[in-house]
Amino acid sequence: MKKHLPKLYVILLFFFFTNSRAQTSFSHEVGVFFGPASFQTDMGLSTEFAAANQATLAFGVSYYLKFFGSQYNWRSGSSFFSEHFKLKTELSYINNTNVSFEGDVGSGESAEKLDAMKAQIKLFSAGLNLEYYFFELEDYTSFYRSSGTVNPFVSLGVHYSYSQPDILVDNVSLKGQFEPYTQLIDKWQEGAVFLDSENIFSASAGLGVRFGLERLDFSLEGRYQHFFSDVVEGLNAPDDPANKSNDTMVFVNAGVIYVFGKY
Image 1 (spheres, rainbow, N blue to C red):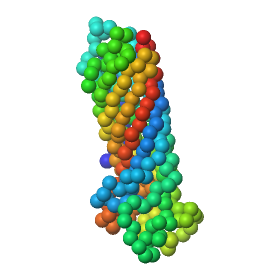
Image 2: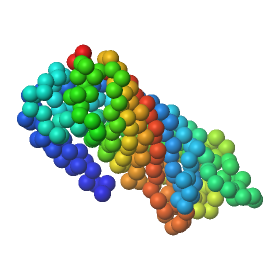
Image 3: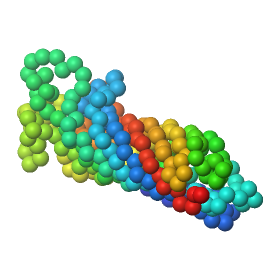
Image 4: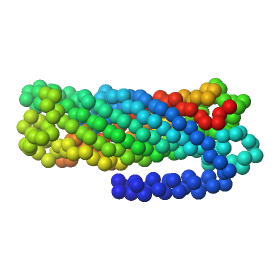
């Protein structure tokens, strides 16, 4: 699946522009967004909602392409696609410097080792999202409904991330050290720590709502993101049933969007 995602970017773009070629013009929006991002990684158990409190603040910028002109006109020849879909591209940055083990660590030497270690996750990401809005977008954007309107939406996306993971024990990085990492528990001492930078693809699904103001809109979205990798945080112990799943993320973000051409 991972190797086919770049092709999916191209196919999605072709589909969008093919379906919108009957439109006489496009309209545009730009925005910023931020919110807590919580990772679920091998620093937890796949049988639980692992690492649920390992949240950090993520932020980014976004650009929206709408498939109709900025001037409302009921004769504009709009289609169902242009009335309900937007294409959103985004750039984001996440830096979580305190990903610690979640769950009951028990007692003894293994518990002490788990308490002493933490992961760091740094992600630079670019995403392409298709958003479906439940109410017609031209009505939502028009002058007589430009303020106080609400439009819920769902989204599907594909994302590329450049990951820079790290593992620290007593705040000392394992980078530059050699296996076996005796500071770690047995399953991570050899062949399970990956600290090189990685190119990672992921898929996302989200649910949100857009609030219309005068020239600005406000959005609120919850998103689930599945990475096609199990080394986002630098750990992968595939022989351990508790760590068999790929890494995931839940991202709740608020955004402010400037709508070009809005009355």
